[in-house]
Structures are given as C-alpha cells and as structure tokens.
Length: 291
Image (cartoon, rainbow, N blue to C red; front, side, top):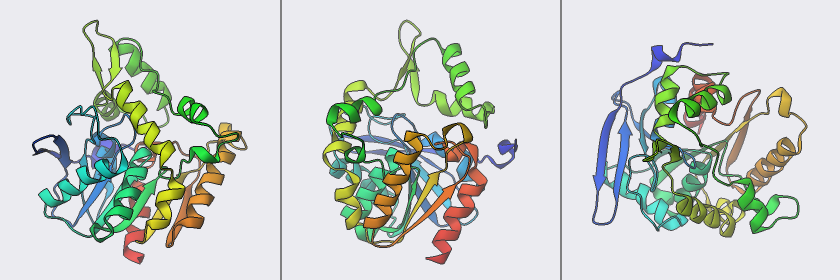
C-alpha cells in the first residue's frame, strides 16, 4: 500500500461568517489556481486530505457543508438552492469565479446544482462517484425505498469501536491519517457514544431534496464540461444488483448532460479519494487540461 503520508499537506482552517451561517473550510496553500472540493453526506472537508497532496496543478479549498463538520448546525436550508448559495458565498468571500468544482457522492449532487444554477461560476464539473444517484431509477421506486437505501449509517458504539469498524471497512487503504478524517465526521455524546455530526433530521431533509429534485431534473441544465468518475465494483460486488443499478444511473446521467465524459476506476471503493488519490488527482487534472 502506498504511503500517502509523504504527500499530505497541512491545510489552513478558515471561516466564513454571515448573519445566519458560519462555514468552516480548509485551504491547502500551494500557490496554484484554486479548485473547490465538496464532501459527501455525513462526511467533512477532511475527506479531501489525501487528494489535496496529489493535485499538481491546483490548490484545493474544501468547506464543511451546512450541518457538517465544524460548520453551523442549521436546522433548515438543505434544499439545492440554499446549499448552492452557501458555496457561492464562499466563492465570493475568496474572490473566485469560473473555477473547477469537485463533488464526491452527495457533494456531486450539490456541485451539479451549483453548476446549473450559477453557470458563470463553474468552469468544469467533476462528480466523483456521486451526482448520479437517482431514486426514481430504482426497481419499483418509492420515497420509502429510497429513504431506506440512504438512511444514516451505523456509527453506534464507543470511540474505539467506531475506529475499529472504520479500520475494517477501509482496510484496503487505512492508515493513521484516516483516523483523524473519520473522526471529523462524528462526535461523542455525554455517554461517550459516537454520533454523526449531521443530525438525523437534517439527513432526512437532504434525502427529501434528493428525491424531490433528482439528477434527471438538474443535470440537463449543466452546460460546463463535466466528468463523472465512477467507482468500478470490487470483485465481490461485480454483477450484483447494486453494481448494475450504478451502471444504469451513470449511463442515465451521461445521456442527459450536454458535455459529459465518464471514467470508471476499476476495483476501488466509493471513497476513491482514500483508496486511489493519486490516480483520481491525475484523472481530474488531465480532464481539466483537455477541456
């Protein structure tokens, strides 16, 4: 396994404060043009720790999105328009315009909506194993089925149990740097039980938004060059219903985005940025250079 620690950069913690929102973000300074990275559901800006060190052409900026990480635990505002405006406010704060935007998992959905709603702000859209998950393409689609598939993950137990579970789930790529990353997504309650920082009520609001305004509505409005980087199934998941559904959803997304390219990374996990950050960085930068 590659020693990713050799490539880790120390980010700067920054804050954007407004009357109703406080956004924490991380900024990896290497004096290159900026690129924005949006994390997935119940994740955090630290998801990008490894990827930031492998980017050669860009300096990464990654926020904790509304209700996540160190950002304000807002009880509302989990619709696409408000989530998009949060990021546009960050772009304004950093005086950024027409820049590449990466979104992992649910972050890909947020990123595609930003690209559709604020086309002048995004030069390239990169959706990393996300942005294409459409509950209406499930067999016998219904809100209840969709909600159950994307229900909050199990983070129960004490800190040691949580770390052991994460270490097993991420065994192909685990190192001590990932311990800090996964801990940035949770907290210990008064009984020292681990809980997701993303409150269940806010998680439910996000799922409702994903269901009511799916990719089939948003993606046709995206006009910038778009790359979908999809995680090819590992051998134990090949030819499963899960793998086939993902192929259907990726193909559906590709067919409705006006300017879209798809790259499948074979034999990897959903968290490609943990497992194959060097390859992911090179794919992203080559796509931007060629478009």
